[in-house]
Structures are given as structure tokens and as C-alpha cells.
Image (cartoon, rainbow, N blue to C red; front, side):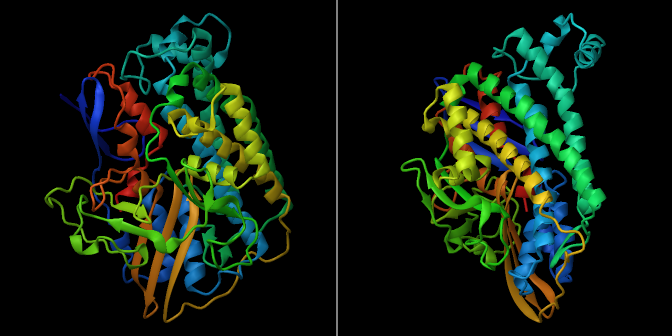
Length: 505
């Protein structure tokens, strides 16, 4: 029996430690530890409620737009604005969040996840005229291998030509990310940490010039996703087809839905959205109605006082207790109906797939057909990568539709007054999955604020009854060829695209 510990996991956001027990080459136990503590929820107490959508974006510099939307929806609810947001504001929120999430998916594959499969050393063999590849070759020849090295060795299977192509796309993806960020800033003022998303709507107004500028950038993003990103994911998944059977995890999926198609329903669990709300299990692949009363957070194995365990987020508490016996993480353990659920692109794509969404059904069936894989293969490492690429395409295609629905001259903001007392809930889907914010207001100040983010779900430790979290379950049972080069483990972890700055409260 051997202990294999990876600390920190690189090419993710934040500080994550993975500890595993390996016996006869198989992972028998796994622990996911979120390191550091930030206390954003504590910082918000006693402040003007309107500070929440500004400060909560500082939870993360990678996915601030999604926190801004979740917080604005939360404040809309608390201020009685849930069904009063102007259509222009609804559309512009979709545009700001959507283009940011789409470029975030590009970031994950090319700059975080793909280097687990792409052997950049093959670029040193390149003899052609591609300027981008020659730039990388020159970089390598001067011994400047970071950020590509150091790495785990032992399982790079892609043909030389595919490796070289992927390395060129690595550089192209940097440009695409910049284009996506520029698009975000057109309507949100800046990035990261938008100033354009506020309770009641948005601060900007659409103009013909801004619509035209945004559309040009969206077209560039769409072209990259269709002709580079998706083909690259299929190419990697074809060679690493065994990873369509590795890292399945808990096989329960939860989606809050995202991108409002209508704003006339104050109940976010019933609102018509591009990605559907609900819970899906691999056992029957049916969509069950989202019931937010089913959510609790356990802290038996987290560094928080036990008095906060088992509570619904609307009554949640952030009371740190570092060094608590048995605890091993700053991440809490969210559960839905007492069960472990994974969130993320796989969850939101599957929720819409089983609900019969025609566009997502076509894309999922096409991808599985290309790989000659059954539906069960979605619950895997490569299944997550495929779902992320499909999510990016669906979002990018709809950005153009939403953009052309904007009406210059019509309002983008609804007036309101801060209530003496109130409560609100904001639900959306960040790049990494289901994102919820909850607020309680007393004396026109924030009495309590809680955020349960995607990686809180996926990187959670054991819950109060000892059941491992989604990432832990995905690791358990994995075969590890070489404990000194545990590439299987980091591939599984990175398929979840963890964001620990978000998850550690």
C-alpha cells in the first residue's frame, strides 16, 4: 500500500491537494483538500446590500462575471425585482456572462487540460513554416520550457503532427481568450470584476456601434470553437478512448440552468433558460425537477464549526475552526437530497440533452457517434471535456441571437428601493457549474451572505455520514501505472476544472 499525494495540483485555479491510498496499483481511498481560507462571506456582513455584486466577484478572478450575475439575481430577488428586469438588461447579462464562459472553456482545454495529453516536445521536431509553431520551437530550443514543464511523464500517445497542431492552437487560443475578454468589456466596462452588472439590470446601454463590435468578436470566437476547439477535443478523445471509461464519479448531475430566455418568472427554478434546470442520474437519464429546498451543506470533515452543519445555504454560517479533529478541507460538503451530485458543463449539457433540447441533442449524438461511444461514456474524463466543448458552442451560437435582439433606446435598468428586511436567492451556471448566492437583509444591511459554488460541490470532502465527494469518488478505483508519475490522477482532477478560490469560502 502506498500514499500518493499531489500538492499542489497545478494548472487549476487555487490551492488543491489530493491524497490517495494506492494498493496493487488501484486507488482505494482519496481525499480532496481545499487549502487557504478567504472569508468573503464574513467580509460582506453589515455592508450595504449593493456591495454584494461588487465584492462577491472578488471570490474569483477567473469567473467573476458569473458571480456578478448570481449576486445580481440574488439582489433582484431580495429587492422584489425578479420579474421586472428589462429585456435589454436580461440580454446584456446573457452576453456578458456567455462570452466570458465560452472563452473560459477555451482556456480550460488549451491552457489547463490539454497539456495532460499533448507532448509539446514534439514541436522541437517541426520543420515547416508555421510562424506560431516556429515561435514555440525557438522558445523550447532556448531551454525555456515553462509553462509546459515540469510535468508527469509516460503516456503521450498523439501522433507528432497532432501534437504540433495542438501546440499551434495553444497560441491561437490565447488570442481567442483576449478577443473574448474584449467582448466582455464592451458591455461590462472592464474585466475581470465587471462594473456593468448591477441589481435591477446593467449600467450600459446598447448602441449600433457596440453591437457591431461585439458581433465581430463573437464571429471570431464561433469560428475557433467550430473549426479548432471541437475537432481538437474529438481528436484527443479518439486517441485516449480509454478515458471515456475512467473517472465516472458519483454519476449524479445537478444543473441550475443558465441564460434567461424570458424574465417574466420571479422563480429562477421555473424560469425558461437556455440550459435546463434539474437533476439527472446515470441510472435512468431522466430530468427531475429542481428543488432548492433539498440542498444542505455538511462540515464534519471541513474546518468549520459543527454548529453550521446540515443547514440550507439560506441559513448557512461561515464559522472557521481550523484544526478541528477529522476535518481536512476548507471546502464544505453540499448535498442534494442527502446525495452526492456533480455539477459542471456535463451536468448542464446532460440536463438539456435528456430534456430533448434539439441543438444539444444533435451535438451530443454527433460527438458520441464520432467516437463510437455509448451514452454512458459521458460520465468520464473525456465526457467532461466533450460536454465543455459542446457547452461553449451552444453559448457562442446563442450570443449572436441575443445580440441581435437588443433594442437601442429601450431601458436597461429598473429602479428599486432597498427593503428594511428581505431575503434573496440567485442561481446560474458558471463555467464550472451550478452557482448559488443567498442573502439575508436586516436594517437595510447584509445580515448574512452565502455562496455555494461549483467547486464546492465537485471538490467537497466527505459529508457528515462519510460519503466521499464527486472528485474523490472519481479517483477511487482508478488504476495508477506509476505512483511517481500519477498522470491518471491529475487528468481526472483537471477534467472537473477545479476553482479553489471559489470553493474555500
